[in-house]
Picture 1 (tube, one colour):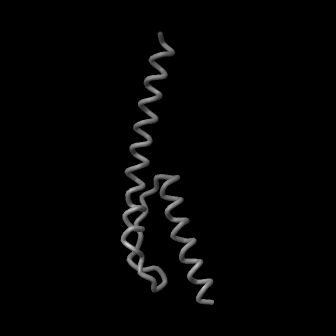
Picture 2 (tube, rainbow, N blue to C red):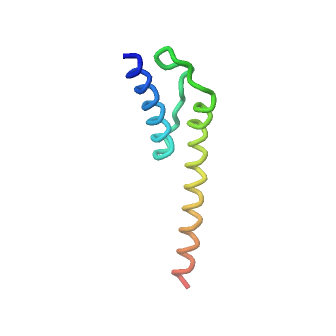
Picture 3 (cartoon, rainbow, N blue to C red):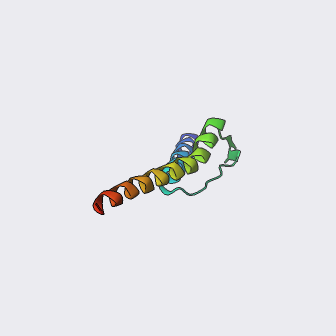
Length: 73
């Protein structure tokens, strides 16, 4: 049972990271999950994904502007 709970915790953390990187949703990770302490590295990586999403959106917008300018020529 302990092994199953450990895997459930690991998969839930991976799911949070995946959701954060793919959707850009601002996710705050609690200090503990089911009695287990969440490592600081995981917290920082999940919280920094919002910044990565913003940079990706700006880059996409920049390329769209460039492609639009070539189409009008």
